[in-house]
Image (cartoon, rainbow, N blue to C red; front, top):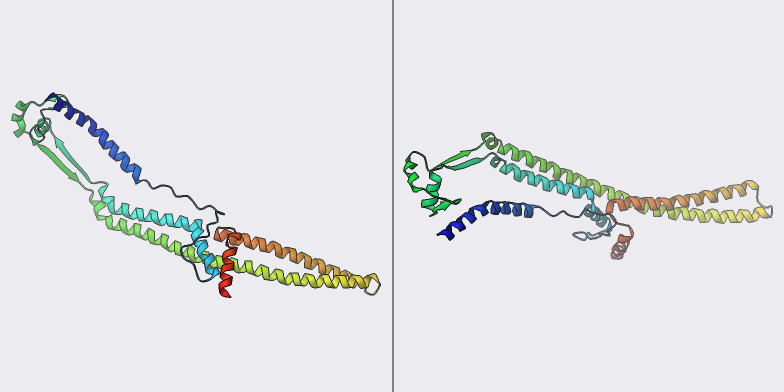
Length: 276
């Protein structure tokens, strides 16, 4: 009998520890692990599906690697959590209680659980004669009616916030798509401009060489010689500006797609082969 009493006392002492442990582990496993943010230049050229053309590939790559869209996706997840909270908000002020008085509590332990002692004290059955004076237990429940009546509006509010976030995501996708296509076309255009300026430079250099030869034997005027040199150096300057524009346009495109241009050049070549 003494061993049983000790076991019962041990169980009662362990109940708070068990309760705290369950709460702690529930809180621990409820936490979502932090996801690694996108880092520019990690050569992430993979996308969910392969588009039919390289232009669309760049668009999909930009959508996949966009930190702005990633933030929007987290925002939508937060809105989903808000909806879940709104649906359970009425439970916040739900309260209840179960009370045993000094007489009925030992009575409950004695005749429902078969205990003879609790917390090291022997249950005095002589006191049970007063049980008729006191109720065995008291139960009370409470609920805030405002929370219950406003539950539908809170859920609707949370759902509307989610719709706003989803609309923003759609707007950002359209904006990213247009900006990627624009920057890619500007990038390609700089190469075409460079080709034209290289042709102009070749022509200016040939003309400069010819005029210089004629001028050296007094068969060309100084004005023609001076103009030929000026035209040549202007063409050379234009070529330098074109090369700089290519670098700047490439940087602008890399900013959108999230990777270095060198990482997608081979992919572009594979699309060019398919065109042929």
